[in-house]
Amino acid sequence: MNTVTGPAARTPTSTPPPDRPDAPDVTVTVIVYNDAGRLPRAVASVLRQTHANIEVVISDDHSTDATEDVARELAAHDPRVVYLRLPENSGGCSAPRNRALEIARAPYLMFLDSDDELPERAVEILLAAHRERDLDFAMGAVHRIRVDGGRRTTWMPHLVAERRTLDGIEADPRLLFEHLSTSKMYARRFLDRHGLRFPEGIHYEDQLFSARAYCLAQTFTVVPEPVYRWYIAPYAASGAASISNQRHKLTNVRDRVRVQRLIDAFLSESGHEALREDKDFKFLKHDFRMYAGDLPYRDDAWLASFADIVVPYLDTLAEGAYARLPRAERVVLQLLREGRLSDVRTAARGLGHAVAPRRVTPDEENGRLYWGGEIPATAEARRELDLSELELDTRPFFTALLRHEITDVARGPGASIDLTVRTYDPALRLPVGPQRAVLHVSPGRRRLAVPFRLSPLGPGLFEGRVRLDLGAARLPLQGFEGVRHPVLRLRHEGHTHTGILLAPLAFPPLTARIPYRAGTTPHRVTVAPEGHNPGRLHLTWHPTGPTATLIRPALHRLSTPRTRRAAHLAANILH
Image (cartoon, rainbow, N blue to C red):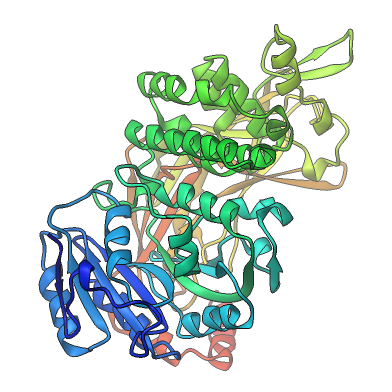
């Protein structure tokens, strides 16, 4: 039996009806598993809501750390908090949410993960939308916050840019991309009327739950205000990573494909087959795309297993969904479907960064241009690998598709590294002969530019060596802590082209100490592979020594626009 504690402790069989006078307006379920450290922050974000008549159900998936003690203490200190502990771990988000639904007292329901937060007006904003109209659910904007730097972005901003009320998902099928259950406030009667609960025993439950909710809802409202803070830890250790960050596990791939098949079945059974192309496009553009950037890092055995899982499902998708994708993504998908695993790795490098293939092949008979070293054998392959629309040989030079690969990284004297760079120019945009190139990297606001020469090795292929002395970088007066990725610049007929540098996928990290120069502190700089798409050269500066722990924090606290301008002027004088 579930354990329920708190000032209002109750069992599921004694749940008061939602319309009782003493019932809260909104129940927010906070699911948690072994997250004692962050749970208080999540619960506090609910308790400080501007709309105070709420209930908080902490639904614990049988944690084995101090979560139970923390949750019981939270429940003891505020009568609005109820603690629910599942008798055994379910291994997912669905069961704790469903068990909380059984005891929730409010007519409106929200969901929160223990590592996230609600903005202070989230409940007020969404409840106001419900009270304006008879809605099945209301939804708002989600702010994604990087825990490794605090950078904040809006999740799917184009979908929540303006306030609007829709009479069904058919009014805007793009909303299938916004599949989070946590960005919404649901009417309890809507969920109960359709028996809508989270599917248990499978990951990516949000996608199936949200697809059903979108299709079953007759009316819902979108508001542009932020209603959820989603904290992202992109480099978390594999054991602590979120489900979406465990893409290296083939079980993760199987779960994602299984959920897609369940969604497809629901669309067919519920009479929403017309949404299939939009849903398939969402899978290709979002779900598959998340794996695509990791494919260069996978070995042959993993890639073969991945293809065995994914390709049969890819073959069921609407042709129109493929046609809506950028060409580079269509190429990766086609190569995977053909089992060309080595080519998959090459094509997936630099997705989204305008990186050229190493080779292209023209078909003189029909004037088409194809990815790779030969004309594709089938009509389907010719359709998907056709690069003619990219106009590789005529587009402006600053948008030309080139490919720069670092083929060797070696330690040089002091804080320098020696790089061997190979440039592929498949459309032959560069003139014959040696090319003047410049390597650029900018720690802080100051640019380090290193010229070098690319020598021709053959048609459309150049190579050169360059020494990048990281100790020569002019760092800000207060020092610099952060990451930079060098870029390569070429000039042709008065136009400049800037492209990213693809580094070797794996090499031993190189670390050097940069002594005091014009800044206030020495630095440690590390050169390493980026470790994820697109796989650039990853340069990390970190201030060291006592000045890093004393002077730099003080400068940061005293920093104002006026002092920053003064520091910038002083740095220019010292340089």
